[in-house]
Structures are given as C-alpha cells and as structure tokens.
Image (cartoon, rainbow, N blue to C red; front, side):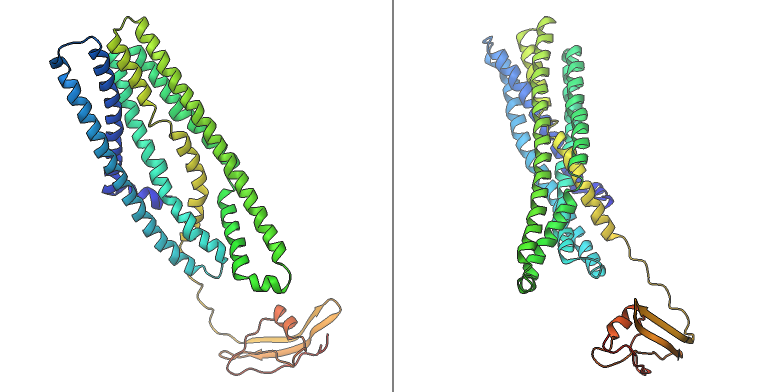
Length: 379
C-alpha cells in the first residue's frame, strides 16, 4: 500500500485531485446558479438583471466539462503509470520466488492483484479528496445564506460521507475478507485444469478437478454478491438521506421567511452537495476489499534475505549409522568419512531402495563419489 501512497507526490495525481475538486465545485455552482436564474426569471425582471447569472451558468457548465476531462486524463494516467511500475516489480519478485509460488497464484498476483492498484487511486483516494472539498464548499455556502440550513447539511453529509462508509467498511471486512485468496485459488484451479489436463485425463481426475474449481467459483460468487448487496443497500440509504435533507432544508428556509429564490438555491445546493459524497460508501468497501490484495503484493515485494555464508569445509565422519522404516532396514552399520572437497553417494541397482535412503540421508553426488550399496534390496 505504501507503493501506492507514494504516488501522492506525483504532479499528475495532484492535478487530478485539483481538477476533480474544481469539477464538482463547478457542478454545485452550476446547480445553485441555475436555481437562482430560474427562480428569478419567474418574476420577469429585465433581461439585464439576469445577464450575470446567464454567463455564470455557461461558465460553470464549460468549466465543469473541462475540469472533468482533465481529472479523468490525469487520474488514469497516474493510475496506469503506477500499475506499470508495480507490475515490473511484482514480475521481478515472482521470478525470485518462482520456486515458492504456484503458477496460478503467481499469475493472480501479477495480473488481478496489480490491476486492483488503479482502483485504490481512482475509486478510493480521488473520490475521498473531491468529496471533502465539495462538502466544505457547499456547507459554507448554505451557512452564509442560512446558518441553520448549513448545520443541517453538515449533519447529513457527515452521516452519508462518514457513518455509512464506516458501516460499509465493517460489513465488507466481515463478508469479503476471503475474496482475494479465493481469486488466487480459482486461478490455481483454472491453470491446473489447463496445464495439467493430460495428466488429469490419464488418471481420471478431470471431473474431480472441475468440481473443485466450481466450488471455489461458487464461493467467490457468493462473497462478491453479498458485498454488492451491501453496497447497494448503503447507496440506497444515502439517496434517501439526500432527499430527506433537501426537503428539511427547504422547510427550514420557508419557515425562516426566505424568499422563493433563496429557497430554490438552498434546496438545490443541498441536493447537489451529496452527489460526490454518495460514492464514498462504495469506496470504503472497495478499500477494505483491496487491503488484503495490497498485503499480498507487499509480501511478494519484501526483499529476499541473503543466503547464509557457507560454513568452512570440515571433515565429516559417520560411524555405525542405522536407518529403518518400521521393520524395514534401509541402512545398517554404515560408516564413512567425507574429506573437504569430496562427497559420498549411496548407489545401487534399480529397486535396491535408494529412494528411501535419499529421503532420510541426503548425500549429493559429486566428482569423486565413494560407492556404497544398500542392503535392503527388494524391500
């Protein structure tokens, strides 16, 4: 995760954040200005009285599109650059750990886990920064026009922007903590079916392997559906709160004796302020889902400890060694001496029991082996 957080210093990401803020502030300004223009035009004033508002609507509409394009361009650029650099590091780490990784798990870390890094930037960090800035601007505007409306809007935004995401994060942590391992396991099962199809067919294990893969896919589907249901419910609650706060702000403005123009501006400003805040519940869930993925990648990127220095060469001497497997004697009364620079190998004809001996007595072949024949032929 630190690899992703370090990208905050990149100018492109800063440009994306600023452009996103300006785009959402422009959206709120466009809504408020349009509300004032429509409400004021209902009184049929001279066209000169509406000139500034007309220009403001056009300016906000144009700037919103320009800044939105800049935010998308800069945000995706930095996300793709981050993913490209991270994939190179992960590939190098997979090569280093290739003896400790199954092909499917390595593929999952190299593809799906790394691709999730762009979601951290585009669906978690960027929306959070934009929502915070827009909320402050909307609350300040409403508080200046009507202080009670500003306080009410602030309470609603806190619930939608903080409480609901916290609930979503807790629920996602409980329900989808195993999504990333399930993705990796499904990749392993799939590659086993593809790469080992001939071996599975030869030993009659294709059906069993397919059933195992189907069970993993079913578990993954249930976990992802439950996470999606939770996000949908939280989003629905947020939309209901958005409408409720808009209605309450309108009632407060009416009871405070505000004119129709001010009522329209306050109501639509409150309505527009929730638009960038509603996705935060989904962003919190996505953050929790991506945390195990980030940990998996971080574990893979840990530096490999340097191998220990070999001990100085010394003479090895064994006397009267006896190795048994239950009632079967693998080695009996074996004695030999290994001088520095030499090695001893246990050799014998096929079926003599060398495989058993190698499991318990790992002596490597070398340039000048000293032959020794096992005594348990046929066992």
